[in-house]
Image 1 (tube, rainbow, N blue to C red):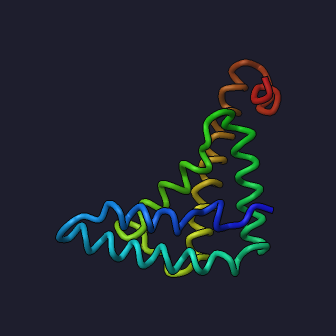
Image 2: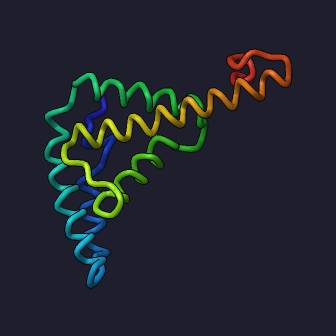
Length: 132
């Protein structure tokens, strides 16, 4: 089972933020983000093997099946981690994972609705259209 620290690389994003830290207000946001990311990273190991961890693994697998060469799971994780300290302020690792899972599930529902609409126009079921 892939560990959460690998799936959700908070520590790597904290290091990246530290290297590119700005000045003034941006520096304060970066420092807040670094501290938050480091705290979240420390909390992730306690969630390994949890139902939330398993949910994320299922979502990653489903996203891999849909996306082909595009790694949308990693893109969504990066979007969420980049927002920390600026527009997103998760208090716990669990809150961060719930937000990422919710984002993935929303995108999945939108994709399924779009696929179903497209396939109806072609006279095929969504599952058949998706597989071809």
